[in-house]
Amino acid sequence: MGVKEALLLSGQTTLIGLTVVFLALVGLMFVIIILNKTLGGQRKPKQEAQPVTEKAATKQLSVAAPVDLVSPIDIDAKTVAVIMAAVEAASGREISTLRFTAIRRTRQTAKNPWAYAGAEGIINSRQTFN
Image (cartoon, rainbow, N blue to C red):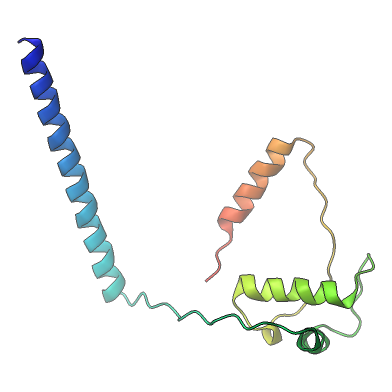
């Protein structure tokens, strides 16, 4: 077998392999679509974000937060309102269904930045927001 025949054979093998892989991926895509439709994988339509005014934020803060909110650090009401709005947006739940008992600063426990980044990556991969 010469070089020309070997190149032709390797080209044909590559083309056949790529065709099989992509056909399998397209088939898998159709199986997922069919399973999603038959098993009722319905998603809620996303609500458009409404701008929060300062007056509305303080109103939500007074409704959702308990009166005896104790925090080890001094945080002003605007910062608390922003944190609460961020939690509401990230969780997808309404602010009236959330209960905030305290807002605390977290500190980095790992001394090695690579260990901290790895732990943070694991934590973020376990969080699901629907």
